[in-house]
Length: 394
Ligand SMILES: Cc1ncc(COP(=O)(O)O)c(C=O)c1O
Image 1 (cartoon, rainbow, N blue to C red):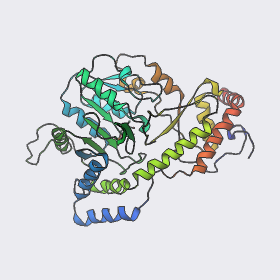
Image 2 (tube, helix red, strand yellow):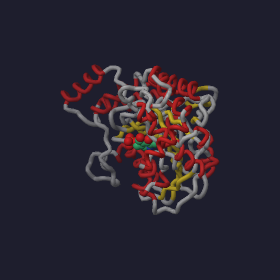
Image 3 (spheres, helix red, strand yellow):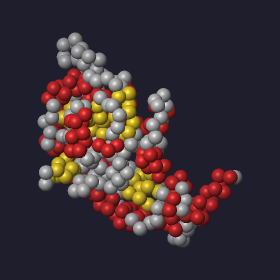
Image 4 (cartoon, rainbow, N blue to C red):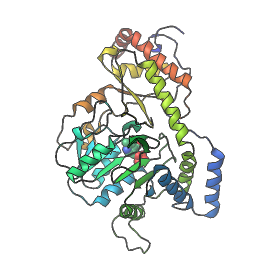
């Protein structure tokens, strides 16, 4: 291997592309058995496997109620619908578009807010203006400062919902102990898509300690029909199939080891990249544990070439990356009708982020090679920048 990055003639660090995310499949035969059971029982959706998933979630996350739904987006949509509110809902712009879409689908106005420069999450300091509810996001699996946000919501007398799409397996340090996400605010909503630490291929989980809210979401996922076909409000088909629930139920047994491995991956990335000029990281709150659904770095001017040039150079090395969340949602075309607000921290993050490969069985050797590729690009940043500008001039 030469010391030149692949984009300027060196040997690529990977022969074939290292995937950005890969689902982990520890016990396929148990999943198959559960699915076969569903197929032969004829109960394919919202049946016993879904109930078992709901019970396991409630027990593991230490909450009273879990309602399984077809996606996190649907779950957020149902929770917001159940609030029966008007006006603006505050949310961070540094998130996936679905957080905002769930607000808009309810005819509510998203009020995009800035985020904390250290954790990249919404904090009480970044909430401003009148809101009738708040939706905070545990970005990449880093828990929000849940207690302080709960205090703020109580003082504003507005409901607080957590978009916990990335949060399965994350822990919050509270009252001298560690608590899983799931029981904060009035509800938390998890996603089960394939890139998540706990996956069911598709699906979502709404967790809450509010029995009336849980009941309302159960109705909402079934068109608003309690069983007598006299619908109480316009719900949707938001059910989870037992086939998806089977995958997530088995995954629960491996959640802890998946998160532990992802924490090892993240520690290794930090250790190997910590002294590379121009590379920054997201911080986890003191005593908390991230699920590390994603591991994202920042590239600033000190690196010596642009974020886009680093992304391009990593592609040549065989490293797949994403840019979560760039552009941030307040700059999406979908929200161009709203008054444009300046969100300086969010916009700076959006310009600098690169999310690196992380999965629950990613070999640490591969982490070493990704880190080596980034270091090599930085050490040759001037050459990489020049070659990239020459290519774009041609
Ligand atoms: C922060 C966030 N919220 C919501 C969602 C939507 O989840 P789903 O695809 O399960 O609807 C995602 C999806 O990745 C997400 O990242």
